[in-house]
Image 1 (cartoon, one colour):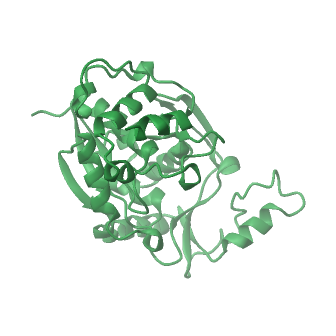
Image 2 (cartoon, rainbow, N blue to C red; image 1 turned 90 degrees about the vertical axis):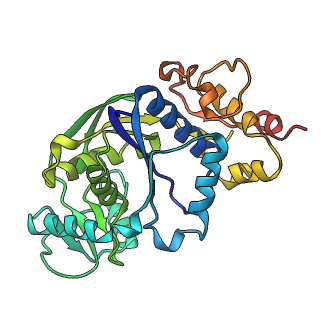
Length: 308
């Protein structure tokens, strides 16, 4: 089969997949299979202390339960630490990054000091002149505006220095941070299409700056950022909203078809005919029919899934 693009499904084994994760992965899969993109499964497992043993296998089991497959992988980030280290050294040597000894508390105190702007914890640049040392490594953000056209969220414009500030690319324990790792991975895996939740929208300008600094400006992928699923309180779906893990529904005997029907409705679809797996809804999916607003998971949704 000839592929016209490459995307990735990138679960993080810091916990089990829930309905919100499933909706994003499902949309990504539908888009990929409609457009003929190759799908790489990448397990983003570099957040050491938060990684849950067995969560990677559980995530893959959940995806298969819904009928979501992939063409390559799984690839684990923890097996690619050398590649991240090489990129970080290039950024340090090129003057794009510097060592930082500041703690999170130091940054919060600086942000709350008198005349410190709006009080948001944008890094104040305390260690910007550090050329050698230990601790974390930060990327040096210049005074520039980063703009891009998002395939779902539309035109985006960020004053990165003012809104986001210098950001960490290597944590104090020596491991690569998310922003750096995904850029290296996406370039080396040939990723051209990224579909993810809009909680990562402000990661995009950071990552675009890394692409440019590493000489990969022409390899920036296309982005689609989708609204999150939230609880009735408007907050991101989490344990406080009950047990919405796919594994919980599966273990309770809830059929995958019922979960798929709910996720499809959340994507603006009117389900017609029998649904056995994700592929049964492939022809019905239209990105343009999806709501631009956050999806609210209600008590009625839970009752529908758990009904006998």
